[in-house]
Amino acid sequence: MEAKKMCIASDHAGWELKELIIGYLESMEIYPDDLGCYSKESVDYPEYGKKCGEAVASGKYAAGIVICGTGIGISMAANKVKGVRCALCTSTEMAEYAARHNNANILALGARTTPPEVALQILTTWMNTDFEGGRHKRRTDMLDAM
Ligand code: RB5
Image 1 (cartoon, rainbow, N blue to C red):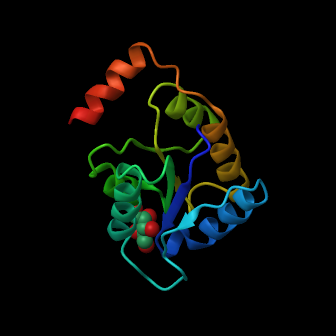
Image 2 (image 1 turned 90 degrees about the vertical axis):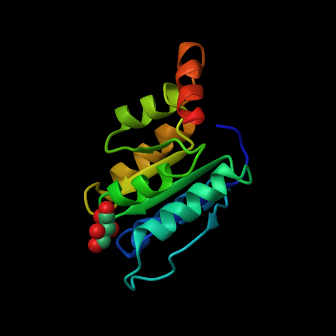
C-alpha cells in the first residue's frame, strides 16, 4: 500500500479497538485521521461507514479502516459509496486476498468477533500485501464502475 494518509472510523462497539489500532499505527509512525466516534456512547454505524467511505472515495486518503461489533454493518455502509472496496476480514488469509486480489481500499474489522491481537495481524497483513493487478485489475475496475 502506498504511504499516503489513512483514516479510521468506528461505532461505539468498535471504539476500543479503534483506539488500540491508532496506537499501533502511531508506533509505526503512521498517523491516521480519526473520523470518530470518540467514546463508547451509542452511535449508528451507517454514519461512520459512510464517513470513512466518502473520505477514501474522495481521494484524500489512500485507505481506511472501519470497525463495528461484527464489522458487518459498517462494511455494508462503506461499500454503498462508489469507488469503495471494503473488505470485512476475520483472518490473515482473508486480509492477504483482500489486498492481493480485491485491492481493498478499506479494511473492516469486528471488535466483538475478532480478538484484538488477531485484528492487528489482519491489519498488518492487509497493509503489507501488494495488489497483483492483471486480471484482478479488470475485476476491480468492474466493481468501481458499479
Ligand atoms: C451495535 O450494537 C452493533 O449492532 C454494531 O456494532 C455492528 O455489529 C453492526 O453490524
